[in-house]
Amino acid sequence: MPNGNEAFSRVVIDAQLTDQGWNTQDPNSVRYEYVLPDSSRADYVLYDRNGRSMAVIEAKRFSINPGEATDQAKNYARQLGVPNVFLALGQPASPPPLVKSLFAKDHDASPPDSAHPLAI
Image (cartoon, rainbow, N blue to C red):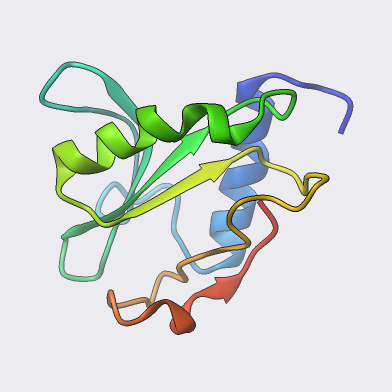
């Protein structure tokens, strides 16, 4: 993937979410650029089947170390009251990424062992 911008990463992340059963066109499942109480914007917020926010995904262009976005993503999760944060580059990284899976759409906030593998 020669392109290093965040928009390109989002195309890849959208495809990865779709592969896990997320309907990226359904705002009851996935919301983009979600405006938070402090007026900042979370790149993605994932919702469970009961409409509860369950995770924040912070997308970065793949030339950035996703660890550099940790504080930003944690702040978003605190504002939403969600326990799960994913930092995503939209491609496999070397060394391996911080997170190797995202929840499948049918995830019901049960323990992490129910997450399905996904290269991020």
